[in-house]
Image 1 (tube, rainbow, N blue to C red):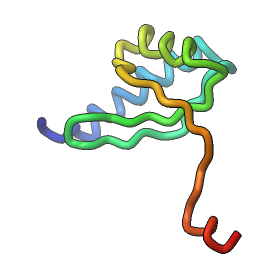
Image 2 (cartoon, one colour; image 1 turned 90 degrees about the vertical axis):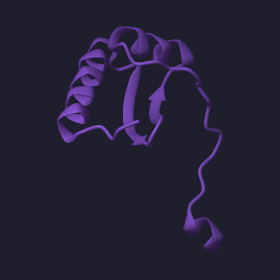
Image 3 (cartoon, one colour; image 1 turned 45 degrees about the horizontal axis):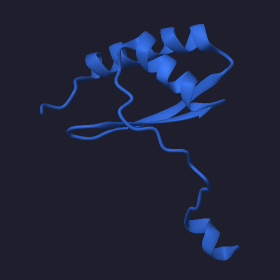
Image 4 (cartoon, rainbow, N blue to C red; image 1 turned 60 degrees about the vertical axis):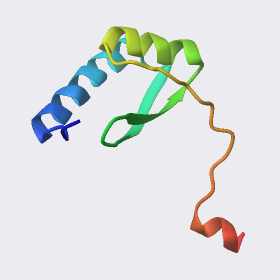
Amino acid sequence: MDRLSAEQLKGAAETSNAALAQLSPRIQWLESFVTEDKTFCLYLAEDEAVIQEHARISGFPANRITRVGGVIDPTTAAG
């Protein structure tokens, strides 16, 4: 798969933002990680259903939704 251009990423963000505006305040997009063949998106959402609704409105697939139960980073070791 070819890398997405800056213009394609901009368009994807615009499409996502338009869907999010319809669903606010039930969902907030934090960031996405774009790999060669997948995109991983992080949301603050009231439930899985609103993520599925975002996917439906935006036209982006949500093939797998995983609830994050905790977060660690390098500072956790100092804890």
